[in-house]
Amino acid sequence: MDGGTSQEKQSGLCRWSEVATKRTLSPRCEPILDYQAVMDAIYTRGWVIVDDFLTAAEVDALKACLPDEWRPAGIGRETLHQDNRDIRRDQIHWLDASLGAPVADYLARMESLRLAANRSLMLGLFDYEAHFARYRQGDFYATHRDAFAGRSNRRLTSVFYLNNDWQPEAGGILRVYDDSEQFLMDVSPRGGRLVLFLSEEFPHEVLPASRERYSIAGWFRVNGNGAGRVDPPR
Image 1 (tube, rainbow, N blue to C red):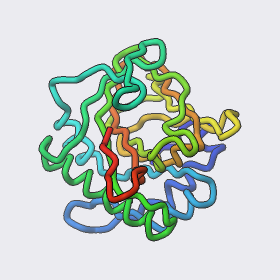
Image 2: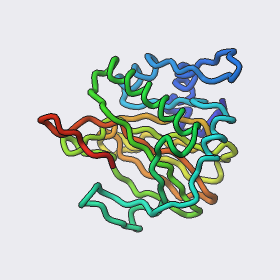
Image 3: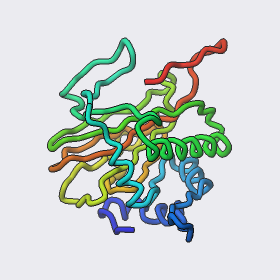
Image 4: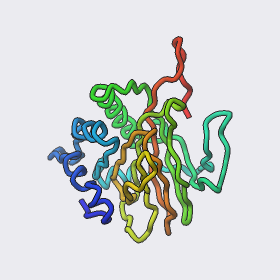
């Protein structure tokens, strides 16, 4: 585990990274997530960071599934969707298991997290949607919330980073604010790092980077429709 930035140390990210992931001597040496520690952190403060959620080899396998075709990311859903390069300039490709076994495995891990969140936090999460995100040199995403109270079915946000050789001087920081929009922490997009936070409570932005930056952004959702109807994804 690296020492991270000074902001990370002050925010206690290293401490939570240590308790959130345990190693096993299995043939794949894959991280075993301490779900209760993760859910306790979300319950207590609304966010948690898990370093080494996947091994470097697993991160590389996921990155090998990156698509050839990308589309500009927009803001809003369905009929409210619009492109606005003053707000965000990243490109995305929505995830599904057909992109390869590493993607299917990642989605299975997110399903395990969904079940754990429902058991521990009783969030009523019924679905998970996610996309690859590519930020080219200079791209950014201005400060925003992933959901607004009572107006979205997104409840828990996940961000997983695919940049195994990331150096702090490359930038690309995820800057997170608290609910009153005061600075909370900076998070470096180093490979294997998973960030989880309550979607309604934490405004955040992605600062420009000096090189390409890859991640998987996802949202655990509740069903906003009644009478047996199911919300459409995306």
